[in-house]
Image (cartoon, rainbow over all chains, first blue to last red; front, side, top):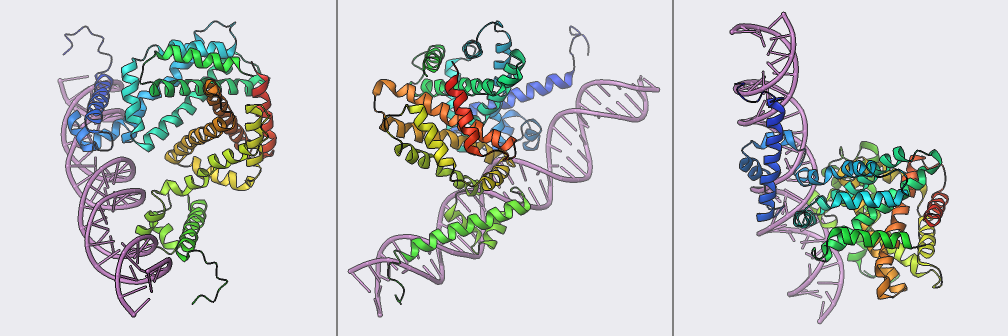
Length: 197
Length: 197
DNA sequence: AAAAATATATGCACCAAGTGCAATCTTGCA
DNA sequence: TGCAAGATTGCACTTGGTGCATATATTTTT
């Protein structure tokens, strides 16, 4: 009743964020413990303390729970790119942005999430599709950073190569079981990319 | 009865192929006429003269109808690559294989199929996922054509770039509404790819 | 502070895709 | 001709997802 600091800034919003977070957390727990396909939406809803119907007020589908973990990355990458100095070559700038950004994700989490996503074909597919979305987001940011109408096609290619290199790096990371840090693999992959031709 | 030519070579197999084909054809017709999401599996089954349950003997899901159109491409590309002369550079050989292979698909069909796939998020996602499968198939073929253990990572990158260029080219083809032939766009995209760095 | 407007939560009935299982019919082959 | 293997089907059932109406909570207006 208003005895708090005073900047509650929307109880509605706060509760919504809390509930959303609670759904993701409990769902991940259940997924990891019992498997993605084996976990029913009802279980998730009940465990999160909401009704099954309310779940769909937060996520459009079961997939979205996992996908939501991936969804911010495009914008994050775009942000990291904007922070790069303007005089770098596009591919180098994007590479550095990706390395900087990926450093922020805990390796153990990435492996766990990746395992979950690979356990279901539809989810895995949508994850790969989200790479394409990231590619487009990145391309849009690149176009703003290096505005030159006649270079658009080239920037599109750079975005494709960069996100492709990111994907291959994460695949290698998974194959190795997380033995080496992602940053190292990324730098290696990008080096090979810049070396060729 | 056996009064026919004599090489019936498995009535069972023949009927199966016929039925599968009939399912795809009638489904495509319905999809194009009424939309993918709006077409029920029951309609497809009935129109194809089979029971709903039998449909699932042929396709694991509704998605698979459309996906099956895409699924052979990886192997086709691998085959086209094997037909390339051995002394070409990997990227050039793959480029030529892709150009040769894509020339075999009628443009109008590609546009129609693409429209359908983009009308449903899950299908579109699986289509993009299938590019990654194609990439792996192509990589496997490349590894056989240019066996050099220390070059594997590099070949992986070439496969990624080639399939990425293919995807970007098809996207451009779609954006242009099929104005220019795919081969032209492909050559342009690959030229830009080889030019950069 | 009451009331009106808006957002959220939920229950319920329903739809459509997909699965397991058992029964029946077809084809291949000895 | 007879029998094994494969194909077709019906049926009951599970699960994810939607539309709609209603109740409840929060915000804003007066």
